[in-house]
Length: 220
Image (cartoon, rainbow, N blue to C red):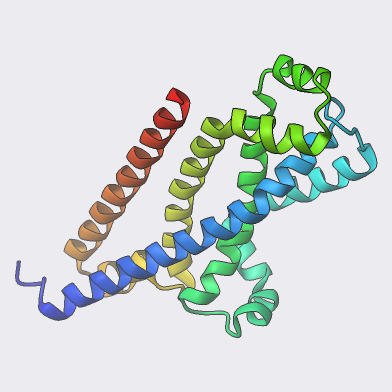
């Protein structure tokens, strides 16, 4: 393959690392913020441990509005915020900001659904034994929902791979940026094909890892 020069190999490795960084950092922030939001939505829901419609409805509206915004529009809309956080609106570091925001809203709903799938009888049993709300959440709700939470995280990771490729369209770096600059703009279809293949393998690896973790946690 004459096109796969040492320089191109370095570019592919650098782009792959940038993609891993964007996906990993975006997912870490999304899990750290999305899980508390999901717990708050669950606990304050109409059938939650402490129903609070005045809090649940506005919070749900914000999450839904963020989820409904196409990612490419979200990236452009929050450019001032991205500059404030990352100091710039282009590059891998800047792309992490909209990725994290989009993934947080996405994960919050997926996590909430996973929490709702926990058998209500288990929660009632914990209540009957005198467990506090905090104990129910930390020792019953989250552990029981763990397989669903891991599965939701896997789905979010796969989606973030696609979002990170889209971020390349506005200079976010990563495999998407490499595919656009060389595969499309410089008419090198072999580069585009290689980028697509790497993304497919990356996604397959993430999905396989997530499925394995779900099986392992479920068996426990």
